[in-house]
Amino acid sequence: MEAQFTTLGAIVGLIIAIIMIIKKVQPAYSLILGALIGGLIGGGGLANTVSTMVSGAGSMMSSVLRILTSGILAGALIKTGSAEKIAETIVEKLGEKRAVAAIAIATMIICAVGVFIDISVITVAPIALAIGKRAGLSKSGILVAMIGGGKAGNIISPNPNTIAVSEAFEQDLTAVMMRNGIPALFALAMTIFLASMLVKKTGDEITSADMESSGEKNLPGFGAAVLGPVVVIIMLALRPIAGIAIDPLIALPVGGFISMIATGKIKNCVEYMEFGLSKVVGVSILLIGTGTIAGIIKASALQYDVTNILEAMNMPAFVLAPLAGILMAAATASTTAGATVAAQTFAPTLLANGVSGLAAAAMIHAGATVLDSLPHGSFFHATGGAVNLSIGDRMKVIPFEAAIGLTSTIVSVAIYLIMHA
Image (tube, rainbow, N blue to C red):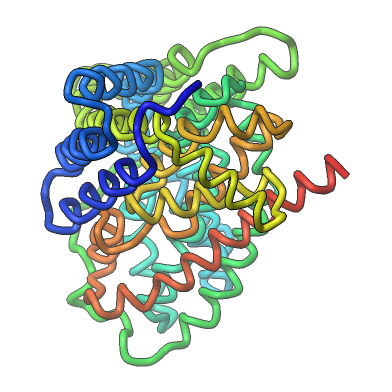
């Protein structure tokens, strides 16, 4: 397809969007305005620019629908106390001596079963702070344990970012989730290694002021807590195992309702659905805004120029996948937005150069977890606030997060090389 916009226009539009996000302008509006300005500077004209933006946003609709329905599962897991029960049980079973591993694994599992990574961290944080205070651990250390565990779980989850990359490459969601299973385990190992070093740091010990006082909670049993997520996993796994295709649009909300029934909270389904919707509506709107700028970038000469640069440097085409994930996530400070822009933009180029859709989706997805927590995004502030960490100390955690994301990315690329050797 012939480029309709110049590379300069696409880059300027993206830069404008980033600057506006940093200036605290609503991210969806920032992306839409960046797309409009980028299209005009890129020489597309007003009518063509708007048409391309609308088309780009339209390409997000299948992902948005699945994400909206995933809110039922997320709302059920959070409001029934299932997510907290899963975290609490894992920490109890592993004990204080293995506190770092317990915190990381708990966050990984909660994120992997369909709770968004920021919510996963916020859910585990009170438990992590309590055990960290008893064991004399630092806030930075337990934050790295939670974020790293969340990153590991995120690349094997039915979360918005996974849905977006699977849609872009027309791949089965379960297959994309499973492809990054080994990279997720390596990311978990790196998380435990780095967090174990940081928990001994002095100067940011957990104090009573960091603890949240909460009333007694009637949490469900562990079996009831995990039943909904287990049903979702089984339903999604039926396609590769038995050839029975159950779309996430169906599986995710079914898991949510089963979770409500199993915990005896089905009477509160309307309240929980509304709560779940409140948690996914933001990312859904963000994806629509992301779609507008993704449409401009996809219709620009950027992908061809990047490909030419890689060829001039004698770098293979598959390098484009992890690199695009890393750069776009850094630009948007969002795993979902970064993975979506990268996948939508470079899917045709990667496929045309012989990179399999499944491998490309996995490498982009893993790459999007490297620099997705920069300060111009909400994840940076939400996770720092979860453990009452200052902005300065929160900044110091970024290199450790990046190392964890880079670990899963390197392993994902290594798997591609081994399988295509």
